[in-house]
Image 1 (tube, rainbow, N blue to C red):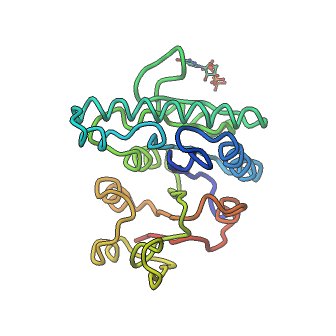
Image 2: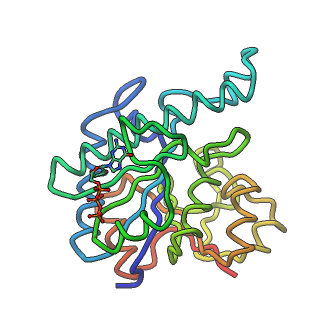
Image 3: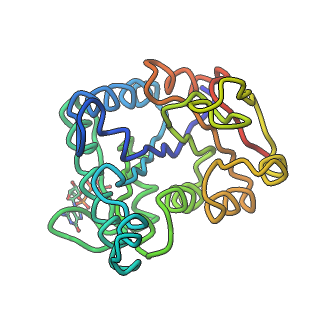
Length: 235
Ligand code: GTP
């Protein structure tokens, strides 16, 4: 096994699956199965999921909503997705704990770093909800922050494309995929991997990022086993 402790960042939008909005139960179950296969190999797993399938703070701001207000609504959306993932995992026998950056004790535990690490050591999948608990930060930043706090070896960013390309592969047929990139390459080429706050936090803490296609069956397990999938960003 290449990694003993990972932070898996999932996109909220991916949960839309075949539906127009919200959560596609089929996609949710598929993700849970992928996570279970890694869990069964003994890897410790923490998860951060976005909320874009339900609410996007930035877009709401364009429509005239106060940015901070919109960001808090987005954080709540991530808690809904976290609860969905939690339920899907527990349904197939994977023990989980959900911790939120915003206190909502009827629903989940508050984020306590030491407790999160203890849960991981006891082989529970830990899901972190409500982002960082602060407006102006993305879920990529939350994922990075939590990954550093729990000393994950890598952040696995699950997307619908199979890595980082020289330009948008969905728009340009001649886009070239990178196998590896250094943090400095990403700055120099102006490629967007994560927002700059998240990306810089990774660089400053020497936390490698792997961008991969989460929708391809078996990818996550293969990655954790050490196969070269997606694009690795490292020092
Ligand atoms: P260990 O002490 O390591 O065994 O961890 P544990 O999570 O099993 O113990 P704990 O007694 O803290 O939690 C038991 C259950 O209650 C778990 O499902 C927790 O997620 C849940 N739980 C703990 N604290 C809270 C809380 O503040 N709010 C909510 N809603 N659930 C909580």
